Length: 181
Image (cartoon, rainbow, N blue to C red):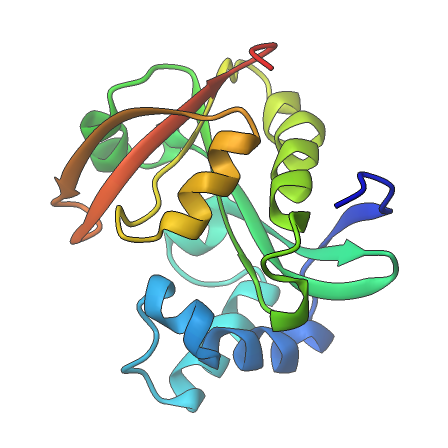
């Protein structure tokens, strides 16, 4: 896939809720984001809360964006400073870290290499602009081979695999240092 795509990120807004709910309901997303057993009204309430700046610490301390490629809204990406999540930070044990999570919601944009391009740009333009952040982490499910391959292509390396007591899930922890690529 050519790197000649216009990729940008804009903060999520109330008008994005229908797409966010639809995307999280898709089998290719729901299986990895743990939403497959939730009702649509629960997922809708979560996104309404997040677009309104309300909710718990997780909702308030995580910055969420819509991924826009060539003028098309294709998915969701988020960043956070690990220090805001002490239990998770203790499990990860990498100081001065920022993290990211994402999903490509529009299935026609999957398996085209766009995820790798999105991650590279987001790490450079968002995560590594956070003050004091020297390392970016991501922790997909070890069974999510598609995501792991994409993150490796984006410059991430495997650190460890473990069960997160904080998030109650298996994690394949990966990291990228500032200026590593």
